[in-house]
Image (tube, rainbow, N blue to C red; front, top):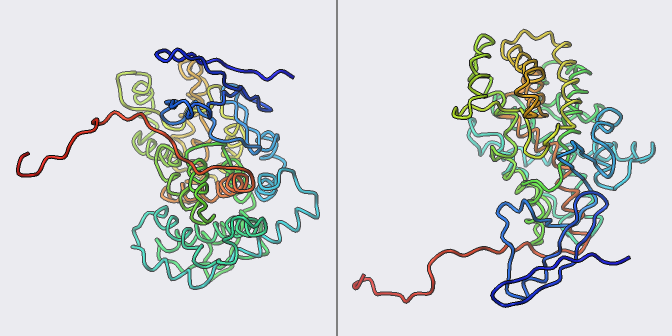
Amino acid sequence: MVEKKAQLKIEGINKTLELPIHSGTLGPDVIDVRSLTAEGIFTYDPGFVSTASCESKITFIDGDKGILLHRGYPIDQLASKSDYLETCYLLLYGELPNKPQKEEFDGIIMNHTMIHEQLTHFYNGFRRDAHPMAVMCGVVGALSAFYHDSLDINDERHREIAAFRLIAKMPTLAAMCYKYVIGQPFMYPRNDLDYASNFLHMMFGVPSEPTEVNPIIAKAMDKIFILHADHEQNASTSTVRLAGSSGANPFACIAAGIAALWGPAHGGANEAVLNMLDEIGDVSNVDKFIAKAKDKNDPFRLMGFGHRVYKNFDPRAKVMRETCHEVLKELGSNDPMLELAMKLEDIARSDSYFIEKKLYPNVDFYSGIILKAIGIPTSMFTVIFALARTVGWIAHWNEMISGSYKIGRPRQLYTGEAKRDHIPIEER
C-alpha cells in the first residue's frame, strides 16, 4: 500500500515539504504536521477545530451525517438496548460485556458508591448558596487526598480502580451537593438499587420514610446518563487529556474536566434552555419570540435548537424526545413551562424556517425539560452532565496514559512587542 502524502510549499525559503497523510477507520484523512517544528514552522488553528490532537478508538462523530458511535455501536442502539453501566463497560474496555462480566462490573460499581465519611465534612466549608459545580470541582479533586492506593498512573490496576471509584462515587457526591444546598441530610447509597435509581434515591429520599423510585423516571435518568457518557474530543475531554499528559492523578484530571464543563458554552446548554423558557414566559408569547428568532438583527436566540457539531440532526435527540414524552405522560405535569416547551417543539418540527435551517430540537432541549419535570433544579443540570461524562473522561485519560503520549504544549502566534531594552523608572 502506497502511503499518501501532502506537499507544503513554503514561500520565502523556497522549500517544499512532504507530509504524511493518515487514514482512520472512519472520518477524514489527517495530515501529519509534526515534522514542521524541525523547520521552525507551526500551524495556526485557534480552538484546534482543524487539528487532531490524538489518536483514539473510543468515540466517532460525523456531524454532517448525524452519526455518534461508541466503540462502533450507534448511540440509539445503546440507549434503547443497554443501560448506563453496560455503556460504561464498553467505553472502558472496548467491548460489550457478557452476562457474568456485566454482573461482576455492576457489583463492583454498586459496592463502591460510599465515600469516606471524613469527606462529608468538606461540604460544611462551602456556603449554602454555592453553585453545585463549584462544590463538585472541590470535592472531586479532594478524592486524591483519600485514595492514595490508586494514584500510580503507570499501574494498569491502579488506573482501573480509580475508574471504578470515580464512576461509583460521582452520583453520591452529586446528590450530596443538592442535599447540602437545600439543608436536608445526606442520604447513604443503597446497593440494592440500580445506578440511576440509586442516584434518584440519594437526591430525593429522606431518612424519615422509605424511598420509592418511579421506574419510568429511573429509566429516563439512565438514558440521560447514556446519551451524555462521551462525545469525542470536546473541550472538557481535551482538558482531561491535557491535564493527564502532565502525569497528574486521575482525580485531579477529572476535576479539571468538571471545571471546563462548567463553562456555559459547553455544559450549560440544557440550563440555557430553561432560562430561555423563563424569558418567553408564556405560550401566548411564543409567536412573538419565534419572530425574534427569525430576525437576524435581533439578539434573541432559541436555545436547544440545532447543534455546533451535528449539522443534520442530533442522533441523541430522537431517543431523548421519546423519553421526554414518556416522562411527561407519566407525571401528568401541567407546568406552564413544560407546556411552552412542547409548543416550541411543535413549531420547530413543522415551520419551514426551522426545517430549512435544520434547527431541530437537540438533546439539551429534551434533557432540560425532563430534568425540570422530575424536580431537579437548573443549577444541578451541569452536575448531572458531569456525573454522566465521567466515564468518557476516564476512558480517554486511560487510553492516553496506557499508550504513547507527550505532554501537551500548544504553540502560539506571537503578536506582542519585539525585544526592547528596559528604561529606568526615573526616565519613563
